Amino acid sequence: MGIGGTDTVLIAPKDMSHGDLILTACQRLWSGHECLFQDASDIELHSLREPWIWLAGSQSRDFFVYRDRAMADSWRENGATRTNSNTMLQFILSAPNEDDGTIEIAVVYDRATRAVERFIRDLNASIVNLASSSPQRGAA
Image 1 (cartoon, rainbow, N blue to C red):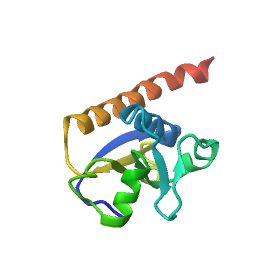
Image 2 (cartoon, rainbow, N blue to C red; image 1 turned 30 degrees about the vertical axis):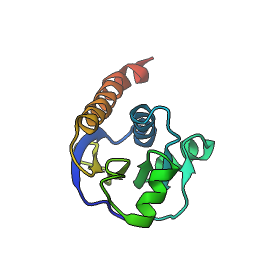
Image 3 (cartoon, helix red, strand yellow; image 1 turned 60 degrees about the horizontal axis):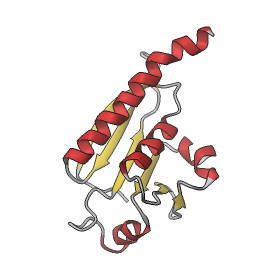
């Protein structure tokens, strides 16, 4: 299931826990909601409270995160509507670019709003911060 809409592409080092960063950012965006994960090749939904997501699901290269179960059900039953707009985000991670050691992370959303723009800025800042601290960890 693709959501159409708009996408923004972020660049990240290939050797990073991309899924963990994305899921953590989604939890911050939808604080107070359950947040559900769905691999694009699967129909099952998993709460971000499940340890499995952080062990295996975060390794997915194409997945959706829903704000809560009601919005996930709305997406399944009706597709994109005004009511469920921006309550599900799709993330598509490219294969690593061996030339420069990066990957592309496409964030797909319904429409650009202040909340979505802030989410993307915060996710990008997390990527930049982790990338800039990585060499220091390797030197320790």
